[in-house]
Image (tube, rainbow, N blue to C red):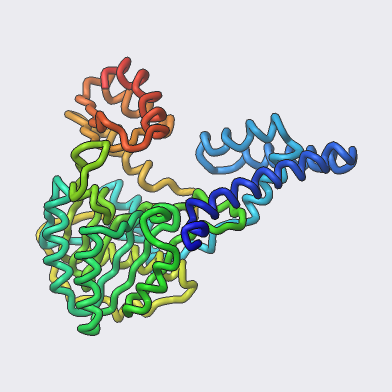
Length: 390
C-alpha cells in the first residue's frame, strides 16, 4: 500500500483534481450570479492593469495578461490567489549595504544587487566531466573539519549519492556539522517520502525547498536549481551537475553519455558561496544565523572572482543581466554550452546582434534530449539564431 501514496501516484493527481475543481467552481459561480460575474470580471480587468504596470519580465506579464483578458472572471481570481501566496521575505546576504568600490562595472552591479563584493581565490579547478568532479568532491569532503553545506536541485539514491552520504555520515560522527538542502520537485521521483527524517536520524540537518504538497499551491514553480557544496568555508563547488548517477555516467540512459561540468574554488571566493547558502538556510528556517562562527581564516589569493546568487524573491534578474553584459561587450567570441535553450527575448536579441556584428557566436546542445517538451521549446528558438549567423 505504501506505493499508492507515493508522490507520482497521489500528490500530482490530487493537485490536478483540485485545479480542475477550482476552475469549475469559479465558472459555475460566475454563470449562476450576474453580480458575481460582474465582480470577478472587474477584478480580472483590474489585474490586467496591475500586471502591465509591473516590473516583471515582459514574458511573465504577457503569460498572465492574455488568459485574464480571455477569461477575466476565472483567471482574475486565480491571479489574486497566486499573488496572495507570495514567498517569504527575502533574506539579506550581508547585514549592511554600501556603495561598491569595485572598478569593474559588472562587479559593482553584483555587489550592489547581491551584496557580494569581489573576492580573491587561491585556487580554481574546472571539471569538464561529472566523473572528474565526483572524484575530487569525495576527496575534499573527507578533509572537512568544521562543516559541510550541500544544496542541490536533484539528489538521487544510487552509487554517487551513496558514496557521498557515507562520507557525510563519517564526518558527522567526527562532530562535523552537515546541512543538506534539496528541491522538493527536483527530487520528487528520486528520493522516498520523508527522506529528511532519515537524514536527521543520522545527525544531518536537512530541509526540503518548497516540497510538493497534495493541497494546491500556486508557489509550485518556485524552484531551487542551485548546485553548490561548501566545505569549512574555504572550498566550494558549483556547476550544472546534480547528485545522481547519470551525471557521472554510472548507468546507461536513453540520452547516452552525460556531459556536464563543475568548478571548484578555494579561498575568499568560497566564503561568498557560504554566505549564499546561509542566506537560503535562514530563509527556509526563518532563523537568523551567527555567521561569524562559520567564518574561516583565509589568506588573500592572487586572482579575483565575483560570486553571485539569483532567486525568485525579488524582481532583479541578476544572472540574465550579467549574461547580457558579457554578450553585448564580446569582441571575439561567445561560446555557450547548455542542455536547454529557452532564453528571454532580450537574450535572443543580444546573441543575434552579436553574431551580426561579426562576433563568433556558437551554442552547443545535446543531440539526444532527456526531456521531450523542453527539447521542443529549445528547437523553437533555432531559426532566428541561425538566420543571424549563430
